[in-house]
Length: 142
Image (tube, rainbow, N blue to C red; front, side, top):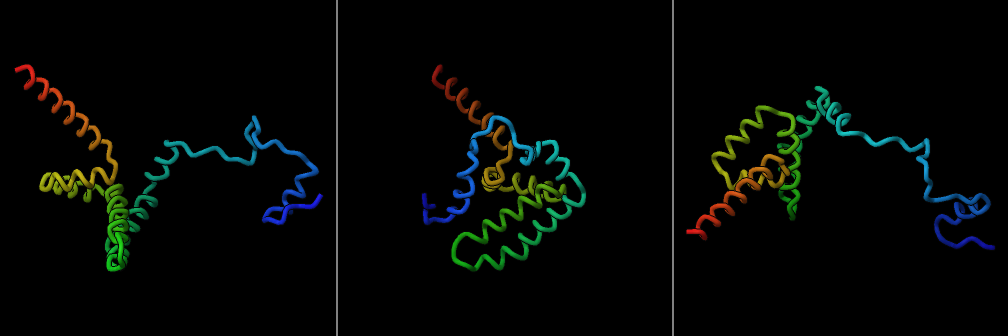
């Protein structure tokens, strides 16, 4: 029997002699376990990693975003957003400035919360929706 004329024909020819089961029931020893959240947090909390993320965020925000900005399309905004999120993740000073900004411009702060997928923003939004529903129920009763 001839092998098919597509890429991977040699692999099929080699595997034809030794049948293999694709869906193995046991985990193969060459497959490493996935990283847990605790391991990831420990890695991110390493001072060298935090400073690296901070510096890369600043570079994205102040060097790459202005260079990409003039190119047609939303590239500059996306790069600036990535840089801002990296800086906010690692800098307490930037977080304080962000809180001041949100108090000054709450609508824009809501957009940044949505873009950063912040849990606190989701929680506040749910509380606000429940409050609106209860206010609506009170007005219907009266």
